[in-house]
Length: 568
Image (tube, rainbow, N blue to C red; front, side, top):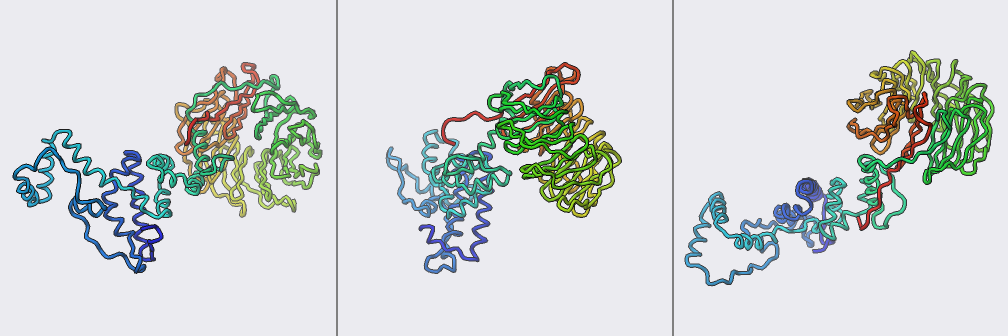
């Protein structure tokens, strides 16, 4: 019968779904233990009995199941039920031995356990070619492609329960399974389950599968690939690199030497130097080729990184511009003059001024709707920039606030008082106080309710902001030996840099150390990794020292996986 002959009514759907779930469990188990071949050998006996009962529906009476048929009890009946002739290849060495029929009658008279015992004894006495003859008779009956018996929708539903690795194994079973296992929507769901974005290009047949495989190779490269010798980008002389941005193939570094440098991530060459500030550059933001920088000269500058042109100089602050956050065409800057200013990057105009802090503003976040700021006055403030009003003042910290994260629901603040506080942005209430760090929390990353915090106590911690629970403390024998300077999420991994001159890679899910990606020659004797920025396939590190033991430089590591020949 064709698939259109099957009419599945409401009363039969639960049977089919139950079967699908059972098949998916067996399929996954078989793949993980024996590989794709075991599927075709181990499951079909049960399926040959169950599938006709569950799926064979009478075309003439669509509201009822087909008439009940007796389940085959002997191997011969099973062969007939499977559509094979009762005739089979006979041994042609001579006439049947005398007494064969009497022997068969005796065998049939025995109970099931007695037959099994007799068969064990018989097989032990058989020669190899005789056992091979039995296998040639038996194996074809258990090599049924049950997936092809199901409608395509049910087959895909069964396969959707498999892990991606098992799907790749299933694709090697036969051409029909390969067609199913490369279904584009099936792989789209696998990518969504793991938060993977679709890559550009790829074959039209299954671009989402191509995306998954590429992401998997990149993650494997981060975790295990031989660390290639990094490109060394020398610049800024012996000054400190204070800020670092990456966008596409461009890298922009800012320094207390009053300059910013634009580098090519492809060639490792300094493309141009952005000159104009008359004081050290302390903060920057970047979107595509637009760079915004803040300086001790009390100004912000908007640059075109491709041409090197200074598009706007933004005047207004009366002291050092210490922090900023860009969203769309607007950037919010915080200053030691205690104010925040909202600027239009396109026009260069200051559109709003937010006043209320009574000490320097040290950190700021902006999501296009709300501004959140933290300062040396121990306060965190939530602002409506359009009305220039402070909606909430979040009190609780007992020392300076150095770091902030804001996802539209929660505000997370890190302070010199060693604590991290989680606040509700709508009510301004403190939801959790996260304790465990022993010093200043200098940097944090928040994504999907997971918070990663880096601290001057040399540890990195992973928290669930919904429960306030510390999930992992990234330490142990491979821990940092000095203050954590910077951190970043990357593909289910955490990157952290430190004053000890290393960059470490950690598994976000387990909290386990994976490996060191960078170890400066002067580590432990003055070498410092100040800043890190990572894209999908690149890691940029700003390194140097405070005592002259390490030259100021950028290190560029490439984790692009090597192309493999052949089809996936």
